[in-house]
Length: 446
Image (cartoon, rainbow, N blue to C red; front, side, top):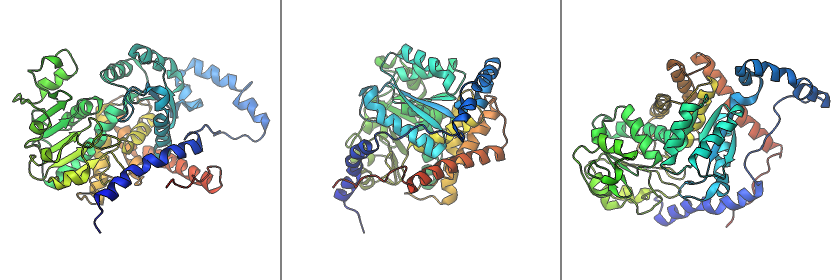
């Protein structure tokens, strides 16, 4: 039975109605729980004073012991200043807290990573860099989240260069990895090749800029790419992009110097990747209709995609992907960031390279291909938890291969650890729900 547009719209707006009362009911989504045995209060002589002093002395002599004797090996900071939260813009750190808590929840449930939301009350990039460097002793990794451009590039580059632990910006590397996985399989379905496919990339913020570089590293010809920002197509004739991060994009893409906006960029393209501003109406059906045969549309803005999937389909799109879980082909960072960080933490990587992200993306794409690709299944769903340990393994092995890992584990060791920690977290949540320590949520509002 065909679903009507009205039913799809109602489904799309459902989650916004449920979220506030559910958040208020639980008063947060994550909490700290003991992981060590407490047989009696005497055990605090081990976990705290006087016994703990000896652990402190051993770490003082060898800082690597912090990974062995504390939870640093599995602690992650989710850091944000709230200047570009989802599609909501600059709402500040306090208002961004529900998103950072949600991120921490996904890290724990899908990756077994103990993540802490750290919302800052400064928007100054140098102060942000200093704040992250100050908290480094407590954490095995840093996830930067929802920073506005262009400072997001500066903050990431500085911290990756100066920190001894992996720092990544999920809106950049995470988005790029999951989009790459979807692109690989979407092109297979329509019988087109990465090297020869023509790309229109709508939006040149943190997500799409890093996506371009990752696609380039994954065999996409930059001369087959046209990028669009809020002022139009990026080309070498635009004075406003000189002396900015976009100048490199202008030099590498659009060799014919095409100008215009979305329509001109999309005309004759095989695939459009949009990560711009919430729609609908950012991409119009008539713009999809001028694409090449069997066009592919990735409309990734949240919470509303640049074009509704049914509108893109009616305009001729063969495959449509969005960032939402209530439509087929959800291209969402949650499919990659828990596993990439699991792999990075397990080998104690010093950074997360683009090659590590590509390895994760290829593992994600291969999993979906093995299950059977279709127009409505180009990428696994978050419920297919088997994808996470597989990606973690490939990420960790790539870090070892590149010489940026402190620990060298083989494939089986990496898989067994990742598989165990993923299942353990989910089993604990199930147990706490079954025994009532995590209460059932209230009834959904009408």
